[in-house]
Length: 246
Image (cartoon, rainbow, N blue to C red):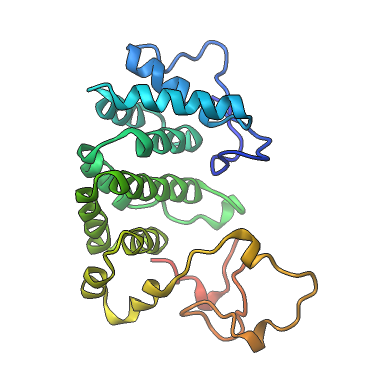
């Protein structure tokens, strides 16, 4: 499989995932074929593709083997194929019921690969972070349709996964109205996660040459004061922050 940016879903997304001739990962059953159509149209950026994706979702929602089929596909796909695993989890979030909860919890709390600064800006850990984050998001979307599934998010929080995944689980559970339970689960030092606000891209777009960062207090939590904004640079963190991510 070939794929562009796995985080891109619609409008303005130039890269896309496409099947390579000779590869037939979705041919073992009719449900697998439908999942393949969902993955194909998920990664298109035109109105026709959006409609086709929604139609695939509608059909998958009515099939009794949908959850088992997608979870088995995720297990079969190589861990190195993060874009395909990400796409399968995205589809799972749209079509699954609470029976997918245990699978998504286990995936979310799996130990991430060790960071290897010799691999440059992106390595296996970064790809796994994308996949694990999508597992949390998929669980949140399932819980919006089946509220009982929200308890699985609390389990992720209680398992204390890597910090980026923990933060995503906290945000997801909070948005589902579980703030008080989260407050009881989290140690006091992590209560700041409850205050993270989701914002539209337009709200946080940086103005060129802006100089008022320190005055506005744009220092991420638990960062030394000289960090006045999140870092977009690559590779090695400074020595005083190398243990920041758990």
